[in-house]
Length: 269
Image 1 (cartoon, rainbow, N blue to C red):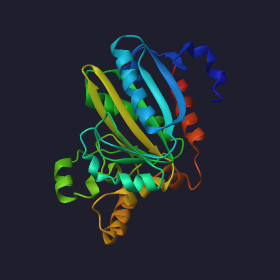
Image 2: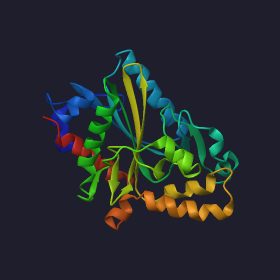
Image 3: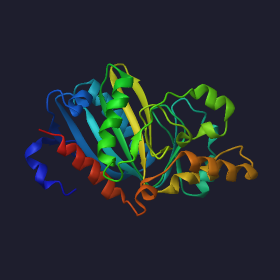
Image 4: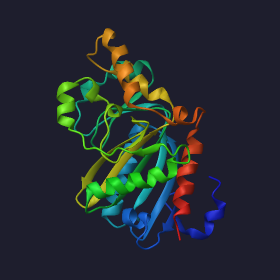
């Protein structure tokens, strides 16, 4: 990862990641406590990615590991539907035709096509979900503002029940609405996140979009007439963006994962 200059900050290695010590009363310590594992695990199949995150939750419950910050990708591309979402919102036959996997996430939220993106998961002890949601996005904001200082927080609360009532098709997709503290660029969502609590353990997932490939989810939706797909695509483009559009250049998975990792290291004592 090109992080040799940070070796002195590594406590030890574990689970194919670095165990790092935080500064007291720092942003990292508010999320992870005294130590955590930074794990850059590369590309894996959807079922493996979801299973690993749940296994990490169980290991933390057993106090067998420290809290975890994991960065990863998906190979092949994969649609994940939220824990409580109807699986029928996505066409399994269309996914199969296109070589795209379909899995259920252990976290909430709506359907995401995991294509060209950096996915993060954070598994940590938590006593205040909303505060952790803010702190985690503050950490990501510090990393992503390398690409543009115009990447900012969503400042408003949104009534998602009303949004789903008025926009039943749009509400099946994650990147059509933003929660408070999610990250946006010029009013468009660039990072989508979802949470789940396992007693006192938080699992938070998020997708950091690298290009527009996530828009192909429109072609995978069930019960959407062809005439409506172009309308949905236009609306999705009006509510979401990506790092390629932000920078007017290609941002690779390696570049983005390196930037996030380097930012984390820069916050260590």
